[in-house]
Image (cartoon, rainbow, N blue to C red; front, side, top):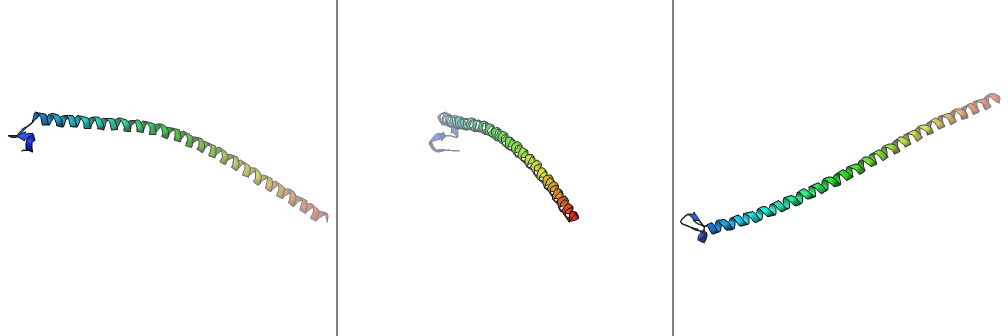
Length: 99
């Protein structure tokens, strides 16, 4: 195996190996730096997600309360309309019977 000036007599130059190790160390520092950055971003995203979950939970509760209030109001309207109809029918019947 010969790699040009880097090798002679199938022996690897210690200088060449040292340069490769320095490059590898620099690459590993870069990878570690990126990993730390990504972990930080992930932590930040988790915090953002938790805040959004809290907001969604609050909106769900608000919608549920609004829905319950609407249902109660509609129920009251139906009961009032039914009662008004009964009163009007009774008034019509009494007029008809009185005529």
